[in-house]
Image (cartoon, rainbow, N blue to C red; front, side, top):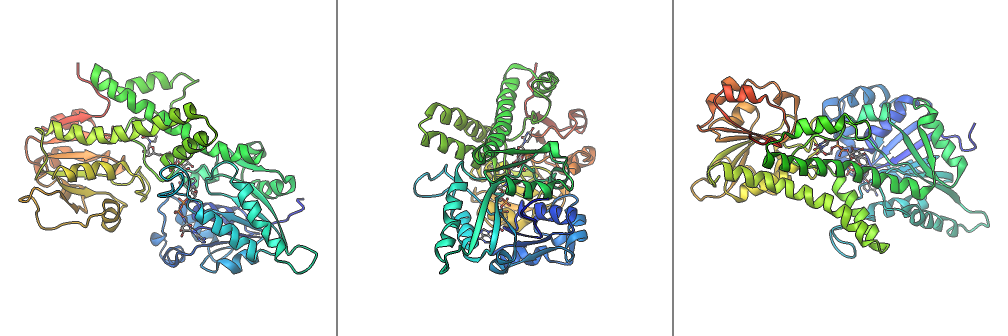
Length: 474
Ligand code: NAD
Ligand code: UGA
């Protein structure tokens, strides 16, 4: 029995992390009331939509979890203050993007939303509240949060403090597209803190479905740093294999064979060795840049440069793909129709944040290409936002300006195209009938596969010219 029994939870931030994480906690702990709050009314309305296809986050299995818990002990609301006031535990799960201006611009995390949450909790919390950092944060942020929370005491007219707080770090390791599986069967749950009772209160919640040996208890700072480090290590593997992919193309080796050969070494392991168009997603780049900023801040410039290179290689990889495509298409794509298959940063998500498709599409638009973009889960409006450019129905071919349109099917995207560029590994792209699709394209037509999803034999039998990332010729 913990000395802080948790009967109600408030989670601030109903995004990709807050929504699914709280849905799983509510599902597994029917005795706890879980309220997810957000300032964004539209987002909360979507979480409350009776049509589960309208949930703001697309994750396989999320609809079932929400269907079981919503209205029973899982609620989505914009009533932030009231929800904080009635909670025994408050999760902070708001966005922590890279700062755009001021000190640390381009590298440090922008903590304004986290600070706003801490101030709101300080103002509205009652009794003893366990505050949990779920957002990914720079090391020692918990100290800043605690300092803000402790101002709540000074507002009391009585000698007794109005409210007291324990701060924990409980970073989230879920990956988009597999969020529900990752939450239900995590490799580990990490809880950092100084207050053992608060740690046990949170551990008790997870113990309803996570074996105790997988619940790691650490110092606050170790927990905060572990999250940044885990993402840096994962991203580093991708940049490493992408660098080798380029070397494979130059030397006649094949990166899939190299990945298999090194991945069977149990010390290296097979995961995160898929070469591709570069890593995307809202976190890898931001978290590494944060690590770079922290390292420089502590005078460790060699450490900073080491990690910075992982991001630089990733940028280079994206630019390399667009440049290579232009070069293969006789040095120009001006006025040429190019089909882009996949705009999400990975399969099984509708998230396009930092997707390699953005930079690559922008490069090709700059070259004057006419892009026809298909993605099974990303809407045209979202692509327009990401590219900062509305879709065009009229042809800008004459002026030589790049333009893009949304294609609702793969066949529509390929109609009249000179090349197909596959950027996301959606299942649907694994089983395309190239023998019939080839006829829709303008010869000589190319398939550029950056995700190793198509069968090269089928492509050549369909009369198309194939380029595969990381495959060199003899
Ligand atoms: P998100 O942008 O999808 O959601 C954040 C939400 O917080 C938004 O809906 C925003 O309106 C809300 N918000 C901001 N300030 C608020 C306030 N003061 N009051 C109420 N609501 C507020 O972000 P996300 O992808 O869920 O990421 C959240 C955190 O989790 C980040 O630190 C991120 O690094 C980390 N993380 C993300 C992932 C992922 O897969 N996306 C995985 C692990 C960790
Ligand atoms: C990543 C981590 O995997 C999570 O553990 C972490 O919680 C999360 O970041 C976060 O902090 O936000 P996510 O970005 O959702 O999760 O997805 P990943 O599966 O890690 O993929 C990231 C990018 O790397 C994608 O663009 C993906 O296509 C690419 N990738 C991944 C490769 O190019 N090759 C690989 O072998 C693996």
